Image (cartoon, rainbow, N blue to C red; front, side, top):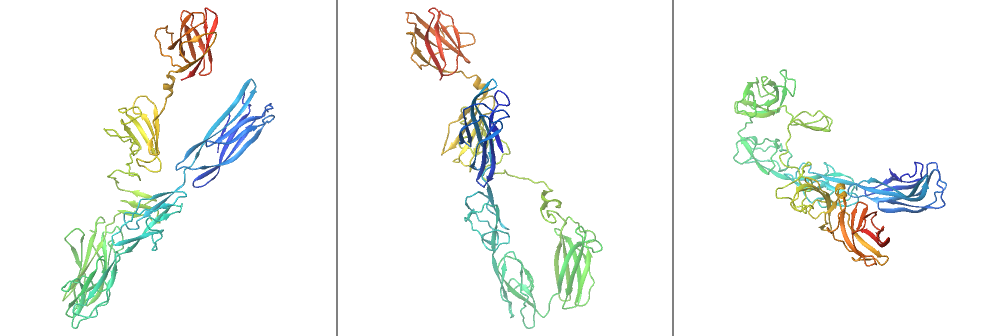
Amino acid sequence: MASCITPSFGSSTSPQVKMTVELSSSTGNTETYTWYLDYVAHGYAASTKYKKAYTATLDGETVAEGTFAINGITGTARIASGTKTIAKANSSRTVSFSCSMAFNLNWGSTYGGTKSADGTFSVSGISTSTVSFNANGGTGAPSPQTKWYGTILTLSTVRPTRTGYSFQGWGTSASDTTVDYSPGDPWGSDTSATLYAIWKADTYQVLYNANGGSGAPSGQIKTYGVTLKLSSTQPTRTNYNFKGWGTSPSSSTVAYAAGANYTANAPITLYAIWELAYTAPRINGFTVDRCNSSGALSESGTYALVKFSWATDKAVSSIKIEWKQSTASTWSSTTVSGSGTSGSVSQVVGANALSTEYNYDIRVTVMDSLGSSDSTKTVFAMRYEMDLLKGGGGVAFGKPATRKGFDVGMPAYFGSAIFDRFGQEILNGMTKSETSGIDPDTTLHHAIVTHQKTPMGTGQYMYILTYFYGSKTVTSNRLQVAYPYDGSGSEYHRYYYGGKWSAWKKHVNEDEFLTAKPLFKLAYMKRNNCQIAASGNDWFTVANSLPAFSGYTLEGIMSYNNGFGDQFLVSYAVYGTKLLAYVKNHHPAELTFSLGCTLLYLRDDLKGQYYSEFTFNPA
């Protein structure tokens, strides 16, 4: 709520007029205000038979005017009230209001004429919402878009990309599979939202070739990024054992076992590899985990618990477990006892040497009299490159997540400049300057120091601030304010509107104004046959031939004839609100005057007569 009240006169009990403005409702692009205009007496009634004229304005519009009878009122009386809806701008703005009343009465010994008051309040800007885009596993999502309340936004036509996927459109959740919006579609909601990319994964064909046998599995489809479980169907060949699948007809090394995982994102034909009635040792259920010396699992353990089962066609001859740092080339090892053609192992290895700072490869090898098989898994270092807070709401980099929010436990560097959404560098309060100067007519920077085209003249350095409306281009409507770079001087402003700049407007400082020299025009009327040689409204040039008056500035001269044959030269000077007139060979006279309308009489002391009337008006 905002209010203003006219000043008292005579005493604090004098009547006043008060205007009150309060917000009654608001939408995304308007605010409606209720206003009240009250006559306020302070226990004492005015005695007058005349109604008093009043006015009230709100946001540049007269909302009430008329007359009001105040006679006999001792309290507060409502003069008028109403509502006004004010359209919001793109940003908040200040709205003024005022009230006045022509009291035209004496209160005590003081006369009160028209008394006025004014005030201001702030109207918020138009509501906006934001449409954000999430690439949902891809990259290159469009930048967020701002939507003004009540408008239709065209969604960005930028399409994100994702290796191995085709972009389908946008959904309203990360798990959407049905397209809700396509690039370039209209968006009408005034609620902020995030749109998520919907992807269709690329697919690849996996074919099988029995390579001399029969009963190869049917082909399979591999989806990008999804591990394919190869068919467990094994082909057959008389007097041969199926070993697995290779990548060429001549392969002797098994690339994939039946039922193994295929992770490559590429089409492939797999060829059966055969051997005469023998299958190499099999290692199953192979797992590795960090643990302590007793085998209890621990993220900070320096041992590894190795578990697996094995099977052979021939009696097992050797079972070996090896380990090494992943980047090393030398293995440490231990042997595990075993007999027969099958068994299981649970073994603690590492000899307290598996540092939590490094990854380690664990390899198991099982041998029989005809061949061997091995399998390798990795025990990972205990590191916190990124950690998520338990229960959600927090993420940390380089440290454990211990609190909500974005937490960084390592140095963070931004190697390049940061730019705003219009492509302009964010200078964090610094001004932009260049040796050759920056043209203020075309600059897109908010704050510059330049000596080009400044309102004080080219070569004069000034600070210039630019405020853009709606967008930031050389054709955008905008306001500029200029200040002297050093020393004293005035503030200037101008506007760019309708494709062109306005002229610079100067705001004169108080100290400059007080030293400004008043200029006047002279008008006259004839009196007693007095005739002034110069014509009315002429400018009078400065003359140095007549006496100068101490503390005054000689402004001009004129001549007149007094009607008795005497010719006189009259000089006059202005100083503040004084005019000094001097008739040659007569006494000077100092006269008080006000600008406009005041008549000044020049008197011939010798003849005892007034000869002329003069009116001095502002130039």
